[in-house]
Length: 399
Image (cartoon, rainbow, N blue to C red; front, side, top):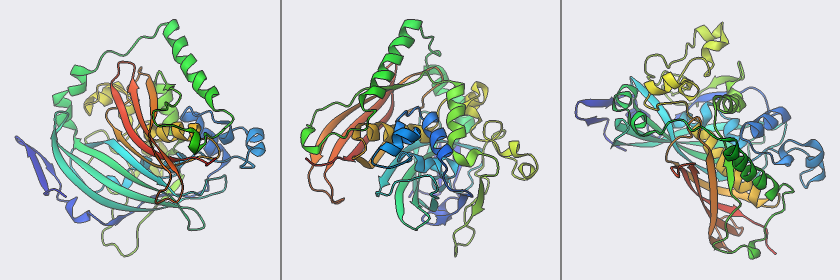
């Protein structure tokens, strides 16, 4: 943990409300309703993940699952705050937040229609560094354990939030200076993008799992592409997170914690806060596509105010893309056990995102008790700028 203040020249983060909360359990939103088949279908539709076992009832019933099953990535979609609630703790006046990365451990239980997830959240730690983007910048981490209605652990997530002073980022204008103009795609280019996308969809639509013994170090996974990203795709992604539906959750706090962080104001810069009282009458005042810290995702002008230059995608979405990509390759008998993703930059409006994965190690004996294949994964845009670096351990069947 760093000291309670950090300065770059005369710019300073006020972390006086952050320090006392390190290591504490925190609260947040709890969904009222169990996961439905529509929630699953809406999720994979938004993630552009056309694996039929998640949306095609006939296909799913004929599979080993005997019916629709959710993708592993949906755990973050059944959480509050895009999963970063325990990493965004304490009031920092004039601040904004972007995602810095996620680490996931998946324990085995599959999520099906009718299941309900409950979260235990803890603010883990933070550090402060001086960045070109915004000067003094806090990198904070929070943990979420997801349990189902039976109390069984489904997954654990460690999210990294990047918190900074919005005015300082706007003044420095790093992305405004370096970000290329929004791409204009020709029909031929769009056709090539769609060919890569369709080749990937057909690469394992039946869910056949590669056998552990048949996979070699150096093997490359089929290439995937998502995009071009647009305001429509960003809005579709936002709506797939169940907590963004009006009235879908209620506030919960951990027992025995004095002054638990739950639904307090993190100190968002002017024009990016919610109207919690007004939202009791007009739900739009708590809708991130109209107000609040997510406005920059779909509004170039608001994006510029927080140093992002133009509309951009969601960090939690990028994390879901990674898990989906690996799970599709692993097939019905495979399972993504662990993924650590570092977010290097956002997916901007107009960009496309290419996925390239490679097997870098094989582990016949592991602490999970199953053989694992280690996969290195990189997501980059059309100019080769890295969006995500990830390392994962994927369970594959033997023999």
